[in-house]
Amino acid sequence: MRITAILLAIMTVLAAPGAAEIVSVTSKMANVRSGPGGANESLWQVLRFTPFEVLGRSGAWVHVRDHEGDEGWVHGSILSKVRAVAVKTEKANLRETPGGEISWVLDRGYPMKLLKTEGSWLQVTDGEATGWLHNSVVWGLGEEEE
Image (cartoon, rainbow, N blue to C red; front, side, top):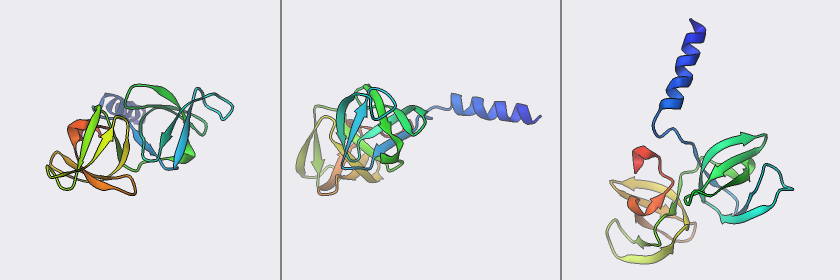
């Protein structure tokens, strides 16, 4: 009976839509490496609040995928569950209010911490600028939030 309950729980997690774990970078800058370990090549660097989908783990290292589908490894000590998004379109208008005046134009890949949602609008910040983005221009939300 106990084994059946455990198997059922595992199958539920594996079959659940939107079950992908999303994490974000907490440090000002982070290296994304070719493998789990500091001796592996740094493939690229990312900014604070960059969101990643977790693909797996090896010790303290986390195998991740970014908004463009690129994969690499990041040390788990600089990742958290802080909700964040990255711009997935070529450009995105950061607005003063939902649907309001444009205050800043963001480039593809720019990461922002998610503060709150209002319908299909997201209030975001990078620690300096705060504004609103439409959820259609970002990556990093769970499927149920898109």
